[in-house]
Amino acid sequence: MSLRDFGPNELMFLIMATRWTILLALIAFAGGGVIGLIVAALRVAPLLPLRGLAAGYIQFFMGTPILIQLFMAYYGSSLLGFRPDPWVAAAVTFSLNGGAFFGEIFRGSIDAVPKGQWEASTALGFRFLPTLRLVILPQAVRLMLPPTVGFMVQIVKTTSVASLIGLTELARAATQVNTVTFQPVLVFGTVSLIYFMLCWPLSLYAGYLERRVGGGLQVRTKKPLLMAS
Amino acid sequence: MQTALQFGPVLIHLDQLLYGVGQTIQLAVLSILFGTIIGVLGAIGRSFGPRWVSWPIAAYVELIRNTPLLIQLYFVFFSLPMFGLKLSSGSAAILALSIHLGAYATEILRAGVESVPVGQIEAAKSLGLTSYRIIRHVVLVPAVRAVYPALSAQFILQLMGTSIVGAIAAEELTAIANNLVMETFRSFEVYIVIAVIYFVLVQSASLILAGLGRLLFRWRT
Image 1 (spheres, each protein chain N blue to C red):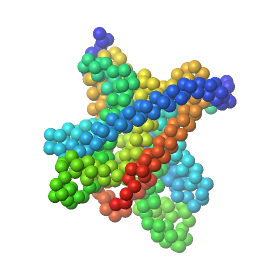
Image 2: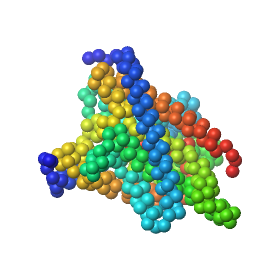
Image 3: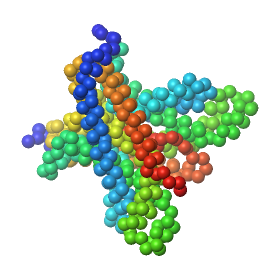
Image 4: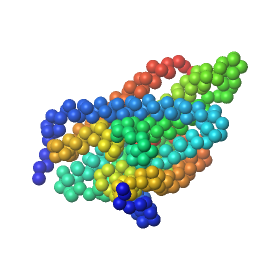
């Protein structure tokens, strides 16, 4: 009793929708990376209120579901007088949310750099930001790389939640195709495969990087860095 | 346009909010229970089973960990009726959430099982313990202890993950929130209240899990 069968056109529709999943993931990665860097810098800043601010930011975004954050951004924008737009809401939410997680990842890597580096740098007359930029971050980058790539997998998967505020990406395209073809096994099987092909190489690469960093300095974070998806 | 926040119209629906909290807790607790059982069996099968057991488990873990929970939810909810298995949206949600957590729990517990020194297992064998006792007392307990922080973090994520099961019309806090938006037209206020509730739930769950960990693993290594 279906309107259509799952054919090449439907497959093409899903593949074209994957563009938006990838685009949203890239926005989240770029936006989250920049915000994460700021959050991490605030998190290790020499002023207590700045550290508290960053900690509160991380607590909020890691302690509430991203779907609720999405809804707040989507409906909150109308409160501020804008017309709610799923893309704007999703881009803002995923960047802010990613910023909290990246902030924790970066801070963990920064913390793993021996304290003597800070002291030596200060003794040489460097202020906080030059120390962070020129001395600490270059050493921390090696450590933050594996969890960063690992978190990209989480971002790709979590973009599917944006379908629930009406953004037409892969997950929403899947429900649309399922509604007209009524072949859920085929439709969601195909979509799972597309997501898998996006995520698995990243997972493998993250695992490879983790093994390569292996010995030496280790990132120590309070919580394992995962994200509901 | 009204811009002032009004929480009154939202908070008079306290009964519905509490019902949603109950549903969310129920979903989280049941799926954590079943998911952990899957994880324990999966980790044992993956570490000690023959290849025809460990390989499918590895495939299951990789497949689940590299696809979104939302798609897994849709797959379970829409596909099972095709095979003649009609589930209510609540049961489908619990099933999908359990399968989801099962994969993560398997991976986490496997790391714990592999952290148990081989000598410890050999010592248990030479003491004449049965395989069941070795796996239960000598492998699993230290394994769970070793990965307990990672496991509880995953449980917290599971609690927050239940928020998306409204997508298949299962009842929980977020779905209740969406109903309240329709009723009150106070969308932003509703989601602020819901965010606060989730935040309190998550913080309480963290405290409970940390307390449970201290209670269960009191001995020193």
